[in-house]
Image (tube, rainbow, N blue to C red; front, top):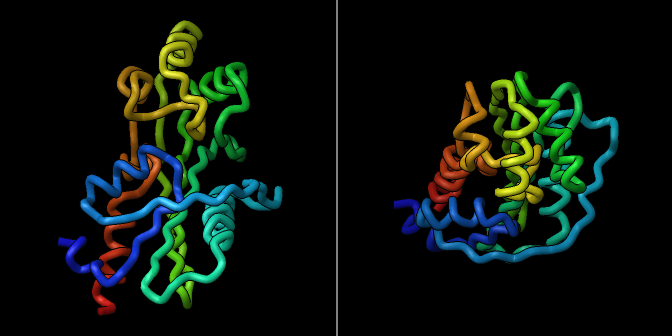
Length: 196
């Protein structure tokens, strides 16, 4: 499968996200993890996918020169709701307010993924629409107390309890909402495999 076709490449996943790392393991793609601390700050004129594209490329550019057979993969996910980007919550109250604001409404989960080699950078993105049912304050509190989703954009994980009981509709890629549009990443890596 794909891992055999990519054996000329050194795949570097620049993400500390356990969910993204697990997806790569499940795709059976050999990879190493390299992390660089960067400040995720973007111009406030950017909107929606412009934000995630910018941040994914900012993370890629932090690595400087790559070897000829390296493919560096960086990504960024936001929840885009009512013309505002919801990233990871600052604290419990922030997380509560985010979930309350999305109750009974539809938001977009946007992920951008950058593929950087020694001679070029390509960035793809995926947008998924997610609709929550009306969430009670009790449900929100239960979720935050028991699942502590403070490392997640929009303060929730679709694969967790809140996703099971609270999401009434999803349009688009499920894996994108978890944190990585796996089908698009797989397809892009297939393109690299065909180069050789």
